[in-house]
Length: 605
Image (tube, rainbow, N blue to C red; front, side, top):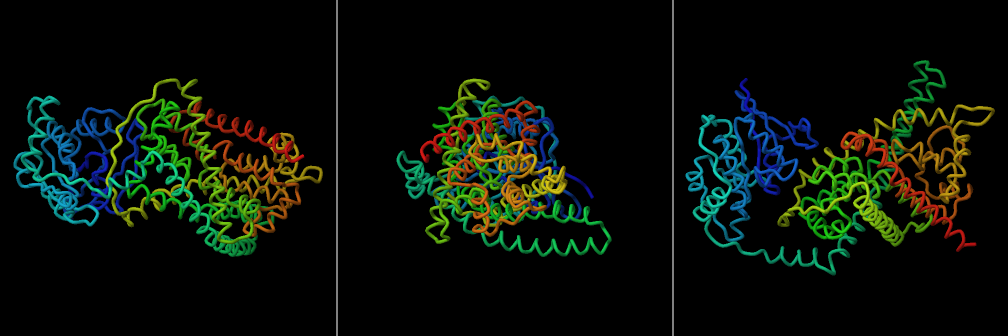
């Protein structure tokens, strides 16, 4: 079977990746460019006689690169590795898109152009003469509606029958000439006048308004937190019951195989039990939060969040793109660190990377929710769930505030420099694409993050079980470690048991509270904390007060990142910055918790 390579190029927000996904389906994977922290999708399809390798190039406004993504796109097209370049354009802003098209045609003539959002352009009062456009550019022009797959078969057919043109030695066209040609072609091929979308203008006036932008952002996030909080309770309980049933089966199975008690308990209660706890606590909140977050992304609200927060981050020596990576951190800090690649400035990328763990990830949300429910809103009613969501939002705001403070400190010390400007295109509001949301949120985010957590949780479970079940002079190693760290825990308004739980929970934040429960109850395995009433009784019996709960919540916000995030930072930025990413939040946690504990104890006494 013959092989050909097809590269998909285009401006950001033109539907390029949607076209790529529609053509390749699930036959794709994600990879990094050699020497670059730029991620792209790679896929394939075939027509029976030829297999087509497809590459979704990073979105680019110009072949004169202003970012790592644009540099990757420019270099790949210049390499002449692709047999065909598919340029995806947005019919609603074709003049701007034509600049990139002409720049690519300046390099290679093996181009197919597909015009997306044709119907939307007509609704806006524009008509595109694709036949004339094809004649003027001397290449195939195909109308598509990527969301509804309209025209996709025509594009596949055009790719399949395309015959590569011989390259010419024409001198490159200067940028000024390209811009003038783009305007000329646009005027010749597009008729009508763009009608301003009054609904979008009205929505933006509210969503980005001086007095309404921030309150609405808080309402949106409070709603997402509430839905995550309420929606994850029952699935977590169901998963806990299912894993409890499987744990008994595994125990009996290993017993029938003749495995001795020590190794059987290590496997069942250490490795499997810890992994099951991580999955049952972590999966439901992620499966709810990530799709909700992706919906905000899909309808076009996230760029408006970046716009609203740009001034705040700019004053702190960073830029508005950090707001997007910070929002991603609510789902997973490790994934958000990878997302920092969208920030062009290396200095600002490091600031965003080092401060991302100041916002709680989904692994910390279940613990925060449990503590808030037990100590601040414990009657189990609808009203208490709303109060819990509001309290959680307040703690999240504290995390965001600390992100800004630390960003400012970094920009004035180890990462000095001026804030860079960035081009932010406000995309039109569009209906969310359910299929894409499911793929992106569940497959690309939830399952990938969960898989990383499981890989870390399994060996950690063995270590935790061993520390709880190996005794020296009648005392478990775990209890001895807790006693050793008790002075540090007391300084933080906690105790040695909780501080040890945070240390042992380094691989996965989800297991912090189960470890504390296991240490308090002197059990040899991680405890199920689904029964919050019984768990609160256990905590109060071991000296917990409201002050302890407040300090615990603050230290959950401000302590070292999980092992997955640290390893991701090391991979993205290097060992030194990974070490600093541990020191920064930990030092912040010690200062904040120490001060709050001291003040609250004086007030209460």
